[in-house]
Length: 68
Image (cartoon, rainbow, N blue to C red; front, side, top):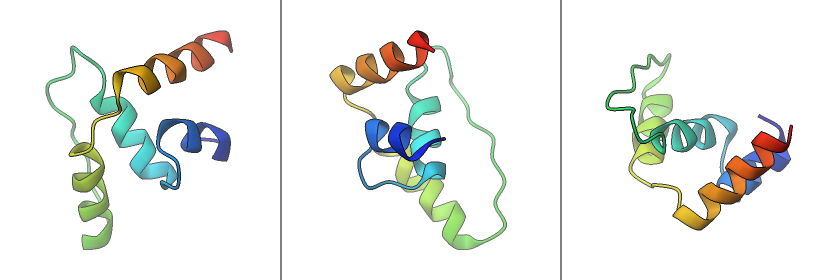
């Protein structure tokens, strides 16, 4: 995750939180398995999964990723 991609997904977010938000936007994905080393990481993951990426922003992210 580059800083530019993180800011595109969720401005001001951390790379980990942005990654969780991106994978939670996958329509066929029902379960995300994760492990963390600290309670803070677990809470960050939980909070990120609770904040879906708005559809318009998701389209922009996918366009950027598909452009390579």
